[in-house]
Amino acid sequence: MESLDQIDRDILILLQAEGRLTGAEVGRRVGLSQPAAGARIQRLEKNGVITGYRAVVDPAALGLNIHAVIRLRTTHAQLSRALDFASRTPEVASTLRVTGEDCLIFDVHCPQAGRLEEVVDALARYGPVTTSLVLRAYPPKPLTDATPTTS
Image 1 (cartoon, rainbow, N blue to C red):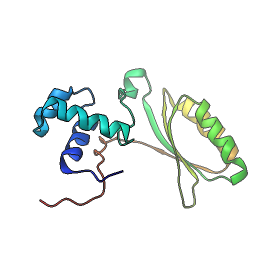
Image 2 (image 1 turned 180 degrees about the vertical axis):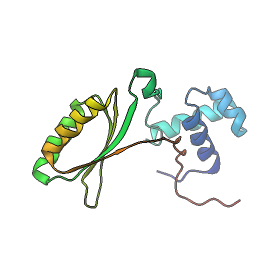
Image 3 (image 1 turned 45 degrees about the vertical axis):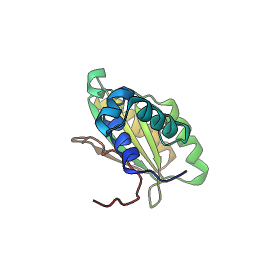
């Protein structure tokens, strides 16, 4: 993949913040015509830089008022079972496989403490767990490539 220029980075920042912008609006904001902006967006999609578009849903609006992060320390033999459990559990919003003492980190949203307890107990079948309640989630920063730019 060729490196991204500043206009590509600006387009990525815009679309991560507002994925429903039209090509014309993206072009206006980055100083390109609609066809030029559309061509860049298509190239970013074709090259796998943009991998999809999705709605971001507020879990509390769905009655999922408890947000927790669960860390699991497991064995290689139990890893696939733990991943299978996570994939079948609707409260598990995302799973990260990590290095260090813990093997997996789960982002979990539950309607009440009792359901969180059930999820924690089920994961504990695969190894020791550590659970942290999330007090506040901050908006993610837009991603761009790590190539430094000159100002």
